[in-house]
Length: 483
Image 1 (tube, rainbow, N blue to C red):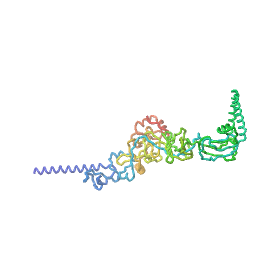
Image 2 (tube, one colour):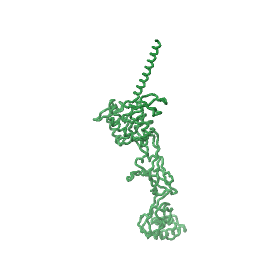
Image 3 (cartoon, helix red, strand yellow):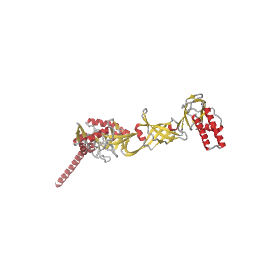
Image 4 (spheres, helix red, strand yellow):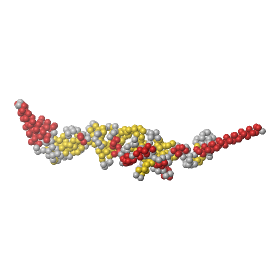
């Protein structure tokens, strides 16, 4: 009899333990479901084919069964779901793969960028020589030199006749003969000085008619009058223009030839307006043409703006001793620009709606928070982030447009307001949360919201100070930061 009572007592204890264990597991399973999400079933994460209508342990691998929700999202804790912004989007790992969502880590680092621009080779304007006439006359003879020819210094280009030329030569010969006679007779120094002055005056008269130094020396040696004045190349260079032909009559000052030196050239690179200021800080430039590379010097002359192409023409200076480059050649120009440390993202990571720029920040467990950011420079496929992100965060760099659509629809359905900007510190503020916390001020019929009591207090001290600073910021000028 006593043994039966003991057995009955043991049985009641066992049944109570089993019932309590079942109730505990049932309660835990019910509490595991975040508020507002319905669980379809539980499955084994290692063997998804195994399903159960209640939580527990998988029979095959011994792992805890995970819930599968009706919305298809991942199993996030109630705390994480509550902490996520109202406009946050929850996407499962499978959906992320389908949407092509890729993440990138936010880092602040220096950036090296190469600005590529088209360029054109041009003459150095300081090394272009114009052969003009010192008097009127007509062309007697021309030589086979055409536009595009490369001529050597003192090469004969053409000859012309002037009616005062023979008289000027006779005066020169008379002065030379007098000087020779006085030299032999050893006249006094004063007489010799006067005669030498007459010789120099006669030479200058010939040069004023267009005779070059070579021809002056030649007729002085031969003491024989020349019938024509020679036109010779002043430098070794490239014939840009040729305006002569046999029998041409010209007036004083006419331009007969234009010759440019090829040993030093300019390269004019067309740089977009947004990149022109960075080019001025470039560490160097590289010019490429048909497999050849050149390293010109960036000129100190400010770039010239071309209103037709809306570009700046940046001048580069290049030595060209072997004439590898010729005027009007088109070349590729690269500028190496080193930028200071900054947070940068791929351009595709930022959604620009025109009114604001947004990126999606990974909050973990499939939650993605839309974050309004402020951008700076944009170079190539990178854009600078001035405000809104911190180093170490993960953001969506691909597949964010579908997330943006989902976030906007969710926010509209829940009546979420557009974040207001704290005029003191510049942060985005949830209007509802700020108003509920008492961080709201009114000025001239308009409401302003703040992220902290300190910012509200600073604004209430001197509202006009921060309102004026906000106007400067909207107009593109730098807004002073809070103390």
